[in-house]
Length: 501
Image (cartoon, rainbow, N blue to C red; front, side):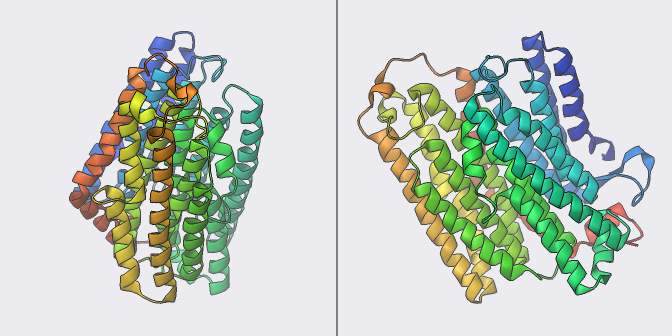
């Protein structure tokens, strides 16, 4: 099974090269992209089953043994993230094909969407599988380089302006990450995560804390935690709907994944748990207050994206087995639901010509299926029982209550308030955009929404419901993943059979 580990990185890269060669044959180009991402989903599923049954699956790239060579490792956390990200990227690709974003002159003057999208996918999967800090950095740079192209597709003034902000912030976070990586190597003589798990413990407390804070700063910018999140609501809404959807669903979660991985494997013990609790609470509350104030659907969803990152940081801050399990479950839930909502925003724009709530209305009457596609994930995001959003939040709040203490109780209160305000924001969108009398733009006769766009959105809505129905088995996987994260030994021994040296 170890031979399967590199495939989620290699297959999209080969697909990207092939689609670039096939730039003048768009139909074949689309087929190659779909096949590559479908293969990724299959491989990721096999890796998850193997990791759940037998433990982490490791490959030493090039035959060089760790810690000298590059290590790719699929433990339960990485494999679960691979499965969810592969499903989401495949659905978003089908949505984009239905929308024609890869072919229209507005969005892609040359046939670059497919190769760039596949490089983005390879970067995401490489980040999940990376077994050393530098390869994690490489994964981030792959996905960021591709995202720079995707966020400015079409070259309109608005996209270039907001894309420039995104590029500057991303480069800054990458420079911080690279500097932290260099300092880690200078202090320990290695970048292998399994080896660092032992060597960082031997450093003086001040040095160790400084390295931890630098990595948290770099990953916090990428994950868009407060106060490092101001760039996101201005950057994401201007991109094409499929691009915004995959960014919202996955790019911030790669940052969250990096925080979970490094905080549990490299810096256990909760040295910065108080800081993370404060950051988590502020991210939840300030993000959702921003959402409540918005009149544009995409900007509203961008603020809810920021807000709900706070729930994941909440679980990392508590660092108990139950809290980490809840955080991992919530990451899986949020990737699916947030991506779905941005795809729905694209359908609203396609049907009504705008996502400005002041210009649309009556969508429940003229497009009832679209109303259902919004209502289900919106209630899921708000945490209405029995959806997966409710189950994930319940797990996190119960973990907070179990830990106790003023900060934990404050986070429980912030999480509850955030959920209520998310419900208010979703209800406001429903009342204005779907329930009130149709506006002129909404009522105008239009061509039916492309079936592939609707079908891809339906598939993601269904995936959100599957997460609800399969919450029991999924929680067992996340609980096992959390237990392994806290133990650290399954990861370390899988990479270095003799133990960390």
